Every structure is written in structure tokens, then in C-alpha cells.
Amino acid sequence: MGDQPRIGVLALQGAFREHARALRRLGAEVVEVRLPEELEGLDGLVIPGGESTTIMRLARIYGLDEAIQNFPGAILGTCAGMIVLDRRHLGLADLEVDRNAYGRQVWSFEADVEFEGDELPLHGVFIRAPRARELGPGVEVLGELEGEPVLVRDDRLLLATFHPELTDDLRVHELFLQMAEEAASVRSL
Ligand code: GLN
Image (tube, rainbow, N blue to C red; front, side, top):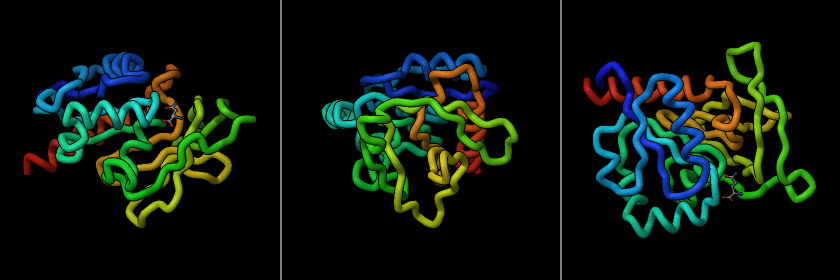
């Protein structure tokens, strides 16, 4: 990997521009990914929030489902992007994610999320947020809201039920870039 990590943002649907902006602010080179070959040579990939059924449908049409399953770099999935990565979809993350799991009364909300290893909480923007359950033994909880996991890491995957790209706090993206560097150095061993 060169000085700058190269990160793809899956740009089929949803909040991909906001992720691209956050990553560029941290010095990453960002490319929008719409075709399988665009994954080549990337250190990481972001699957943004949006509508998981639409993202899955478009990914299948373009052959990106299989390409993402074979992608060796780090992956950040937020909200719908987290759903797409679970056992019942692409099967990359060892957990299950229930869609729209907070009910209509709290369809969307903002709340402080306790962030592992940091005194300062993350400000979580939750939009028709999913809930993670049945976490596999290798899944590490990095962020909690009322005792529930909302930010988790499974090896080279980082998953958030909320939208870190919608705030100015870049700590989740920063962690993701570190993971992309780690995954790249493991591959070059
Ligand atoms: N509710 C959406 C879904 O099921 C996810 C919402 C979001 O990404 N903000 O895909």
C-alpha cells in the first residue's frame, strides 16, 4: 500500500457521498464502486446506509455480491450496509441483523454511544436502524447503546447500526482506515 489508503465506497444507492467526504477528510483516496473490477487494488470498502433490499438487488445484477464476498480488504458497513454483510445476506459477518428493529415510535433518533477505549461518546444518528443479535464468538463490541451492540468488529469488518458519516466526528472512519492498513499488511506478508 502507498502512503494513502485507497478506499472504495459502494455507490449503488444510499449515503455514499457522505462516506466519501469523511474518508477524504482523513486523507484517503476514494473511488466510487459500481462494478466488480473497480474493487481491484483497494485496501477497504464502505457499504453505506440506504435500503438493504435495493443494495442487495443491484449488487446481484452487477455481480458485486460475489465480488464483495471475495474482496480481501477491510469493510465498513453502516446501517443497511451492516444488514447486507450479515449471515443471511452476503454471509461475511458472524451475526444476524434485524431490519427496522426499533419500531415506528422511535423510527429515527440520535443518542450518545459509548465508545470502547474512549472517554468521549460517539454521537449516533440512528435512521430506521437495525439491531444486531446472535453475535459469533469472534465479534468484538466496540460501541453500545443501553447495553446493546451498535458498533462491532469482526476481524477486518467494522459494522455500525448508526450513521457515523452524518456527523463531523471522524473516529469510526479513522478506526476503519487503520483496519484497512492492517488488512493490507497481513496480505503482503
Ligand atoms: N431500514 C433500512 C433497511 O432496512 C436501513 C436504514 C438505513 O440504512 N438508514 O435497509
